[in-house]
Image 1 (cartoon, rainbow, N blue to C red):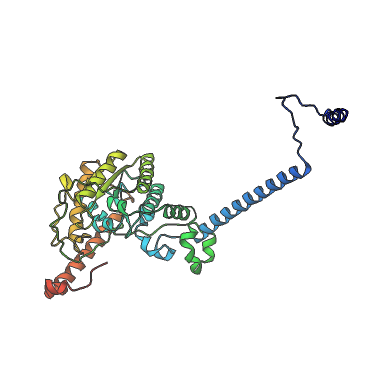
Image 2 (spheres, helix red, strand yellow):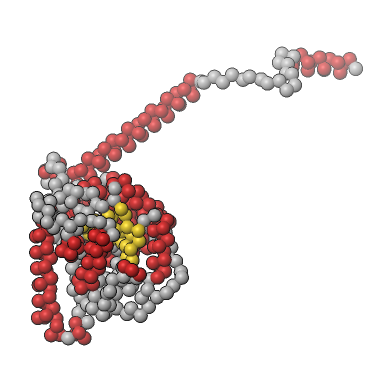
Amino acid sequence: MEEKRDTENLIASDTAAAPITPMEEVDVPTVATPLGRSRVRSLARSAGALLAFAMVGLLVLYGASRVFEPKNNGGVGGLNAAHQAAEAFLGEPENSLDALFIGDSETYSALSPVEIWKDAGIPSYTCAIGKQYLTYSKSLLNRALAVQNPKVVMIEGNSLFRPFDEQKLVKTAVKDAFPIFERHDRWKALTPEDFVVAPENTWVDDMKGFRLKWGIRPADASKYMASDERVQEVPELTMTVLRQMADACHADGAQMVLIATPSTKNWSQARHNGMVKVAEELGIDWIDLNTGDDEVAIDWDTDTRDYGDHLNYYGAAKASRAVADILRDRYGLQDHRADGGDTYRHWKRAVRAYERQIEEAEHFNATCLAPLGSDLRATLPLEG
């Protein structure tokens, strides 16, 4: 028993120096060691260096983009040939265009601004390339709104059914912010002037973005716009970009409108139903030249150049005149043919160039193609 008490006293003496009351909170002071403060300072310096490096990199990209940017919107300036006509609104007098048509090859084959000018005196422009994604349509819209103040912007609905992913969306945004990523191949043509001269857009496309085509390849229209209750949906990412475009138009005071140009291959009742849904969701107008009150009387035996995919000149003239009526009667756009000054003087030259091309093409068709007969003409290569 004596030995046991001694053991208990030994234990008590070891623990008595730090008595702890049950449930008692113990405050343990946190003291930053010299090593901790040093590490924080090191991380701060690293973050600052990375930020500075990023800022320098962005400035270099911005400066290089200004150097690589074409100094003129014509071919000599280095603008990509596929986009030259689509972006030639840059050479138009500032704030002189009342309507824009933005889309893919359906648009540049169907809507002729010169035909619209001849019919209604409305200055317009067709901003379109083949297989155009809505991401590039958005870029074109933003570039146009920077130099023009259109009252109506028509977006061709066919491009809304051409899906794209987030990666393409990001790439387009980067190219818009830093054009060097799009114009990098200009390094071979750089001159000393590129480092000091500001861009000056002087080239004007007399066709105003329209591409006049003459081939005739009849279409099978037996199932064209047949009754269908289905709804072809527009991808959600496309809707996101379309909403941004609608917001940009609204902020600039322009009315955005969705339109479908005539095509047996690209339009159906299911797509029409899908576009009705999109227009209702965005609260904008939807015009379908394939059906309903706005249908254009296209002769699918003579008015298409590639079996119903695109219109030729004859079909485009009909579609353009129909759009001219809509712009004038529905949206109240004014006739500027009698206006004085220099703003619209170049449209007279555009009309002369347009009519000269038509005359030359009709003469060629009458003297060279007509004698071949329709069967032999059908074997000739399609026009691009």
